[in-house]
Image 1: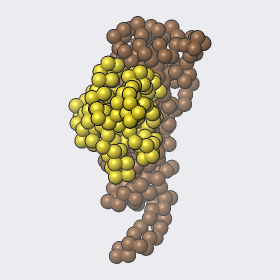
Image 2: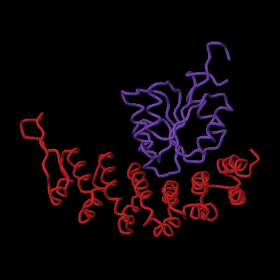
Image 3: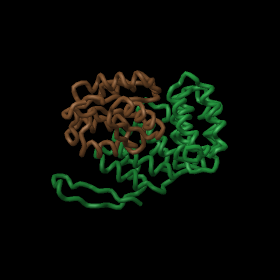
Image 4: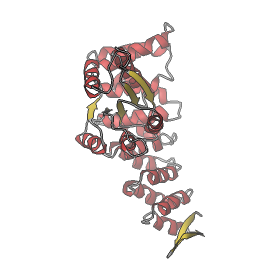
Length: 207
Length: 132
């Protein structure tokens, strides 16, 4: 079980370490001391019954580095339930939260594929951009398929350009027609046009 | 350009390689000197050792997002008073409000047309250097 630093009242310089139960660590996720919350989050690694508390803490935690610790612990549970709970935050108004959630989801290759059909069809194009951000870092054999599908079908140019950017490290000459078609779909988007024009020579070997 | 004039120096902060290339191409073509960082953390490190006349900062980036980056650029460690333009795919009003709250001078939605970006960069760096 995790270790939590404990300050001795009236003696701020003295610190002891106590071995705590899972229940105690779960309670400490709400401690006023940020260091204690962080230690509690990390200490709950491997404690499956703490997952609901950790997911709640993702919402309540205001310190970004502690939230990252919570997300590190909870993303180790690569299940659809956890991934689904984190995917909700891709729509957050809090940029730090939605970016941290995207980074956590990118570490969940077992469960993310099941969520992708709904995420790439999300009505909010900002959520679809964040989904592409997940795909860019997700280590999974189907990543290329999903990015290709977004480039081919997504109706918003920002989503398509984000997907092109994510696909480029994997792209080959076979992807050239896909990129050319994307540029034709959005002829008035200068950035998308530039992206495709810049990428094509590298793909077709004409650079 | 006279011997005493130097081109304004711009730091582009974006995790997307294509965005960095697009903005670099536009700005270098207009006479700006351009450096790049791939996330907010790297940008802060770079800005601690070099002086810039303008920052173009993305919002959603790994390691350190754009808002925290701008706060750090304005803080004592870097202490830059150079203009900051935040550029994002997000077009929520709350994102723009947050950008201004952390110290950005302008918030733009992607994509930014080339001529507009150059016009804004020229305006914001007026007096800080002279594009070649």
